[in-house]
Length: 210
Ligand code: SF4
Image (cartoon, rainbow, N blue to C red; front, side):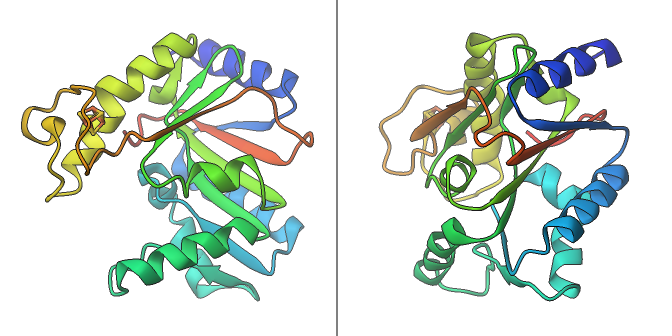
């Protein structure tokens, strides 16, 4: 991935009213997120699970700092119904952070979600949203985005969660299944950011996440 492609992607996102930054490392992404959180002064912060986001260290930092309440809907010590209730509350957080499955050089963002807790607060609810994505998430168009999610993101995500009984859990290949454990349930494509600047997209010039 060339820097040129990252620049094209960032410019397209800006044209579509996303606030956008390119950084070299997860550490720079972390610093930028801290700055944004400082400016927003949120009372309630939450997040949707993302390998890239966790790699920046922002969740550990949020847990140990600030005047906000951190809604953690992924605490393994909690029973699942309790975790889901926290994810419902995250819809009304002031600031929400998560990752992206694919970003196109045409300036659109793409996800495929199991529960919907990652995509719903991105679409509406929190006043500010921060999204992080490594350069490996950049593709040229919607078809490539959907292909990337189907071939790479979804099967590899299943591999992180032992106990899911889906065809891809056995073979690593998507069979467009109808299994009760299917993780590919709701697709979201974000075409523009409304209101302008509500979403900050941080593109990291590293291979990160699924
Ligand atoms: S549709 Fe089914 S088989 Fe395909 S990636 Fe999703 S869970 Fe796996």
